[in-house]
Amino acid sequence: MKICVMPGDGIGPEIIGQAVRVLEVLRGEGLPIELETALVGGSAIDATGTPYPDDTRRLAQAAEAILFGSVGGPKWDGVARDKRPERGLLGLRKDLELFANLRPAILYPELVNASTLKPEVVAGLDILIIRELTGDIYFGEPRGMEVRAGERVGFNTMIYSESEIRRIARVGFESARKRGHKLCSVDKMNVLECTQLWRDVVTEVAAEYPDVALSHMLVDNAAMQLVKNPKQFDVIVTGNIFGDILSDEAAMLTGSIGMLPSASLDSAGKGLYEPIHGSAPDIAGRNLANPLATILSSAMMMRYTFGRADIASRIETAVRKVLASGLRTADIAEPGTRSVGTREMGDAVIGAL
Image (cartoon, rainbow, N blue to C red; front, top):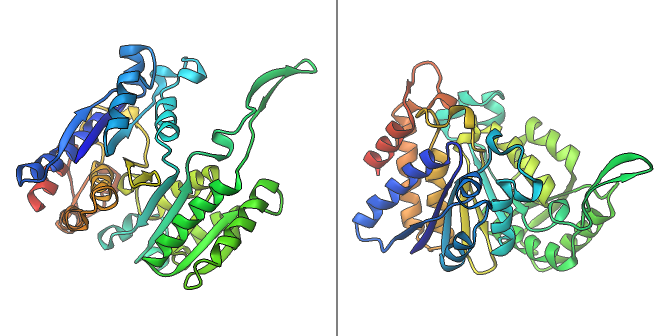
């Protein structure tokens, strides 16, 4: 199991450190895990002048999976746009063709009161958002800033090809088959031609999956429905920018963005695994960050890249046991629970494992 570890910036090294400790326990039990560490983001800029160095690219290409922390922070706000820390992550996604981003939003029973929504609205929540990751407005050309008629203008291009839509739609349908056999495709076809094509192609692909119930929803309505009645959804498939926004919204249904892992996969199962939260520079180095999303990302890695659902379930069960014991990091703390730091939460998961 060749894993490239990229701690990145901010709280990245702290949360990655706890996930690596879990992997080291599994390696000690005989799992053939090989770990190599690579620079990415701001830390790579500081060391090499670029957010995605050639050595990092080489290690990423040689690995079967990447465990990723976080990138960015105010320290690098003045860096040129094409050299910003986030370009390291975008470069990885594009370079490795990681087109399918899987973001589960699961509300653990122990955290039902941590959500800002009423318990009856979110209790039992278990949805999967599938976000197309290598196309759309984030990568479309032309893009840039220029002066027109004496004023500055910024422009980006939303673009999808039929083949890009078809392959992410199939990921959505296949995922729905393994869950509740319901797929909701989110677009903005009433305004954007690009997403009219999205709806047309997803509808065509649906003919290959007669056992999956397909529905369509406009993105603004989907944002409202996620708050109003989130449990109506099973699997959601959508484009890059809509998926970015909706998955962060769904994260807060679960009580904390610090609880949610993600997987970014290519067509062969190689993946980049990361928590969906950011680098949180304001709490970096203070032993406050929640490492559970990163630990759960390592569980997704075992399930999706290495085909070890048994190991993934062990890790997930360990996290559930820790939550059931009443331990909480600051982001999910509530009356009657015991607040612990990043390292202590890692200790507890390893103990439960």
